[in-house]
Image 1 (cartoon, rainbow, N blue to C red):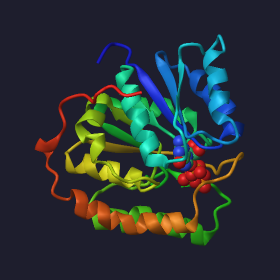
Image 2: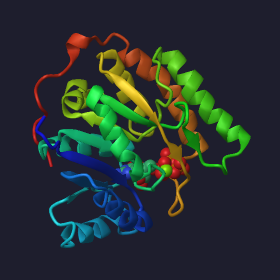
Image 3: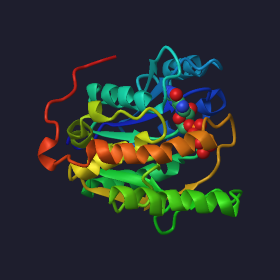
Length: 259
Ligand SMILES: Nc1nc2c(ncn2[C@@H]2O[C@H](COP(=O)(O)OP(=O)(O)OP(=O)(O)O)[C@@H](O)[C@H]2O)c(=O)[nH]1
Ligand SMILES: [Mg+2]
């Protein structure tokens, strides 16, 4: 890796017009040189894609904001995969995955980047010691989320990860190539679990740092009980799909360049 790694933050958006103008400046104002943002918008009806384009041409951000426009809402997984491949094609050494709704707070990025010097993936973790979720969550919601992440998912998959559904992460370039993103089939939120399970099977070193996870202040969540229940069932599918993977099956060739 060069002296100053090229860092790309991939932000998937669907109707985040109230957040995009907050998060992009917050990221670019971090004192991190060579940090770029890639917005992956699924043709948001609220105009998020155009707001992102407006930011991209603002003189203070020019050259540091890229926007990928996808034709329609096609799910978080495919948006991230296209975004990751695009960031790699643009020369990213490190790729940060985060939501655009400010539940993933930019202030943790220096810690993520610091930790990734010793491993392949770092997860900003709600369930590592010292991590926490929004105070407004009731006891039932807290318990369910804790159980899903600390008990259900790691037990089924046999992985020692405390926040496998957490979507605030940094990956090294070689690791995103080695995983072979074409293996990842999940569309929705279980994408996080599939990707981390494949990484674990392939022997990548994964670490977690504690974060506080506040609820979004603006815009609407795309999460629902039905989506969460489907994700829980799909953990089994992920197990059967990838449990035979071995370290030798790491991909070596970079991806073909796509837009
Ligand atoms: N491009 C794209 N982005 C999406 C899609 N679905 C969700 N997103 C984005 O993914 C991120 C996470 O979505 P949220 O609705 O906040 O879901 P969540 O964070 O799991 O749920 P909450 O905790 O309720 O906010 C946000 O930046 C969304 O705009 C999609 O189909 N395509
Ligand atoms: Mg959210």
